[in-house]
Image 1 (tube, one colour):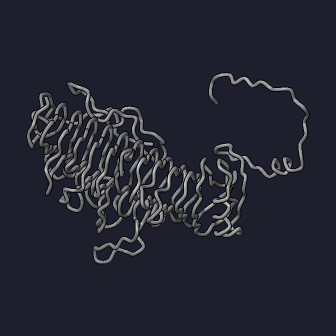
Image 2: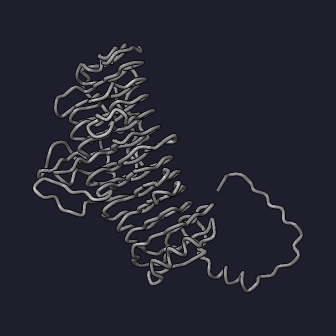
Image 3: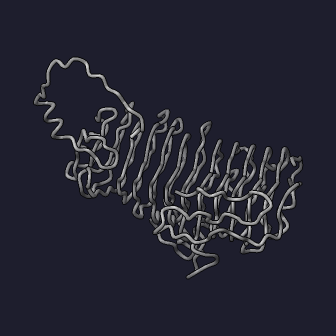
Length: 446
């Protein structure tokens, strides 16, 4: 019941008609184009321009800027230096990818004041820094698809200028051990610009982060929320591994400077166990989701609106809260399963008024390692907490009309090896023997 109060190949036939053919003539220019074009195995787009490591970073950047709208720039095999692109303002996607069969590594790419760039199937030893000048109204239409990140200092940074970077797709990438430049010293970390973070959203909107694998970042897997109105969608990703630094405050996703229309849906976060080994947490992160109103969640002018957290699975995911959401106007937390976090799932308050228009339904939270409350629900007005399941008594609180408490977990399946199985087995952490449908429904991860 809703209440008010603080506790609360298209398969069709495409027919082509050929007009009268005046003649068949292959000019020398057309022949040269036909011979020069190379078709990529990944997307079939021909290579309008080819570059090699010997082309040089400046000339490669110039080729990308000068590329015809909708064309492809292909990299031959080799190791490429850092490339800085300025003013590549296209009206249709220019794709940057390897030649078919080529083995390519790139020591980082920075793009400034640009549009319609697609980076595909590159091996990045350093990351992508999309950083506009302070007066530029905003780059737009960037895509990062099927790239592999091999222990760079940062993964992808979206840092707009006078306006946010808009319409960004980050899909199918694998990020491994994004790290810090300076080593940990006596339990202290020093993180430079975006270091240790897989995806950094400084000033961007309309961002989709989907079907990626994030493995053992040093500082944050994802940081930052949407500038609005389109927000950030984080869907169908896998977060895995363990905490790599004792000084880290690794989060699955941290929003601390406000956000509008941010969604975390159909994701799986799975650690290597609970507790510590060799002084490091075995969980996938220290905090799971942590959405704050500024540092310490005490800057009330920093607001969040229309937040959705739906159908996610957290197993050994956090050595703190798996879900930790502070003052938000409009939040829906529904259909999630949390197993063996330290503190569980919380809609919380710190120094700002409690959330309003808040829904927390159909969630399962069990086996907290700190024996703390499975659920917390601080809501000031228009609140709904119902049909949740816990192994303590908290699922019956906050005005719930229907609930299951003291539940002993029963799952159809709990075994999955992501390294050898691309998707979880059927029934993976799907609850059994409950009086109503609740918790993670399956279909999550990449």
